[in-house]
Structures are given as C-alpha cells and as structure tokens.
Amino acid sequence: MSIGHTLLGLLESGPRHGYDLKRAFDEKFGHDRPLHYGQVYSTMSRLLKNGLVEVDGIEAGGGPERKRYAITEAGITDVERWLATPEKPEPYLQSTLYTKVVLALLTHRDAADILDGQRSEHLRSMRILTDRKRKGDLADQLICDHALFHLEADLRWLELTAARLDKLREAVAR
Amino acid sequence: MTAPAGSLLVARDLRKAYGPTTALDGAEFSIHPGEVVAVMGPSGSGKSTLLHCLAGIVTPDSGSITYDGREVTAMSDAERSALRRSAFGFVFQFGQLVPELTCVENVALPLRLSGSSRKEAERTALAWMERLEVDDLRKKRPGEVSGGQGQRVAVARSLVTNPRVVFADEPTGALDSFNGERVMELLTDAARSANTAVVLVTHEARVAAYSDREIVVRDGRSRDMERVV
Image 1 (cartoon, chains in turn yellow, green):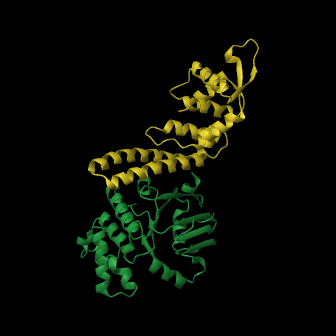
Image 2 (tube, helix red, strand yellow; image 1 turned 90 degrees about the vertical axis):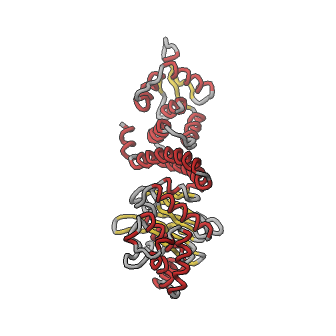
Image 3 (tube, each protein chain N blue to C red; image 1 turned 180 degrees about the vertical axis):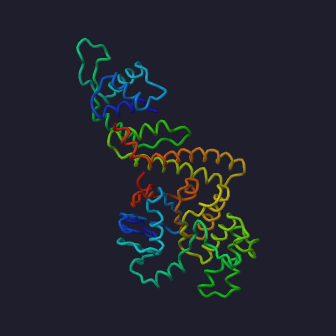
C-alpha cells in the first residue's frame, strides 16, 4: 500500500499537522499496524520535495513535528491518478483496495468507479489465464486454476464491498 | 453512445419500469457477430431485464434496439416471435428441457417448430449433440441425465438453428464449477466457430472470464468497461 498517497488523500479534506495525519491514518487504515512517526515525517519530506504538499504554517518553537501541511494542486492530481489506476491483480490486494475505496469516499469521489475499474482489470487477467487453460495440458490447467481461484476471491470481496458502499460511506463520515 | 461499426445488435437508452420499480434507466449495449459479451452486476441491477429486452421478450418503455439494422421495438409480436425463432437461441439456468421428450427430440424441437422433417431435424440435432459431447444421451429423457449433461443438451438446442445471437442467462448457475466451466468452454467454442454472438448474463467471474469483454449494469444503467478503461 502507498503510504504517501494515503497521507495525501487524508490531506485533501484540509491541512493537518504530522501528528494529526498519523492519528487519522492509524484510525482509518492502521488497525494492527500503526504508522511510526519516523515514517510520517520521512514521507512528508519526500512529498514536500516533490511539490505534492506545502507547509501551510509552522507553530512557534516547533521542531519538524509542528509543521502544518497542505496538499497542492499537483498533490490532488497525484491522488486522483493513483485512485484511478487499477492495481495489478495479485493475491492479498485487499488492504490497498480497501484504502483506495475509503479514501475515495472521504474525498467524495466515485468509489464504485474504482471497484468497476478493478473488476475489469481482474477479468482481463482471468481471461488470459482461462485462455491458457483451454489451450494447455493438465499441468497448465491446474496452475491456471490456482491463480484463477485467488483472483476470484478478490472479486468476491470486491462485489461484497460494492454492495456495502452506502454503509461504508456512513461509517467513514463519522 | 455511438455503437461500434459492424455491430449486430445495438440498444440505446433503454428504459423500463415495473410499476414504481425502475429496472432499466438508460442502458446501452452493443455486440458484434461472433463476440461473447458478459453482462455483470449485482442482483436486481437490471441485467436480466436488459437481456429480455435485447431478446425481444420484454418491450422497453422507451429507447431503441436494432438487430441487423432493423428496429426491434417497432416490430409486431408476430415479427418478433419469428425473429426469436430464426435468429436467436436461448439457454437458461434450469427447467428448459421438455421432460416428456428424449434429449435428441429436445434438441431437434426448434427445427421441428420451424417445419423441418423429423429425420432431418434429428440428424442436425445429433451433430450438435456430438459437438457438445452428449450424443450418447440421445435416447434418454432429461430426468435421466445429470445437471451438467442436461445443460449441454440445452446448449446444443440453443445452437441447432444456427442462430446469430445466443442469450444465456446464468447458464452455469445450477452447476458445480467443473461442469460449469465445461459448459462455458463448449458453448463459447461452438459459438465462436459458428460466428454466433453470445450475450452472457452472469454474476460469476470465472464464467465471465470466457467472454471477450464485459459490461456492468448497476441501478439500471450499463457501463461498457472496454470503452471506459
């Protein structure tokens, strides 16, 4: 999962201090893996260097943790591009997809669009595997079937999430 | 939407309501000869209504459906029935074979209804049953064959008239994944080699993976993923 894009997405709703960003990240996406402060500040300095965020204000007497960051136009475009690009279908994608969906809802983008794009990308991979299976021997068939079942599991999660988008929208807005 | 050149069946801005419930709300569709298009979407999204409209079974409240350049919504009931008999084939989830007839009689039925002699109809039927690997069941009745075999008999029947379009509504919905995939493989192989288009309604990704592209229906509106991505 891209921590940089996630932090950028969180900044879209308004400027925040590094500490607030960490807290928002942990609350929405951290679950059993909270961010370290070091990760937040190294990520923010990279984003700053790349012009995706800017310093909105510095509190007096502050060290680096007192900086308040705001997303730039280039930052918004970067989040937009990341959300719109389907992930390469591979097992255990859920955390990245989940993050994209929640961020889309938080930033009032169309989360269903992201899920549709991802379904399409998965099906593209599944078509290639299905074709290989049709033309291959038994060993090919078994190898392709294994990959197909994993992709199918992702898609079942995706359909279930699509069906629960309204509830998720309410939950993230709290 | 501008339909791609060479489309066989095109629907534009289809709307259909059942009482207060909107089933289709501006759905679009197009398919080429020999193309397999999966129609996906959650339950109640309108995908079966879309298929029924495309097949001329249900008349939309508004919008246009053209088959081979002819406006289907402007046809009389008799003309639409004739079109369904001559140009379309159908496969459903279950309950489509006539239990009193043998499997070969079931497959031959559409040809018999179009006036072919019994001998000629059953000869053609048997050729399709061989193709679908169920010719050994010709004398059995539907009650005596397995679900997977019965569905292959149904696929043979859908193709026996050499239709230009086969409409398949959850054709593997009642089968286990092994039999379901075998049905899909045989259906799509046979359809592609005969240049028959297949409109495949399914909610299963592994079944949709046998298509060339998919459209997604949500809240009665369709989205053609190939032309979006």
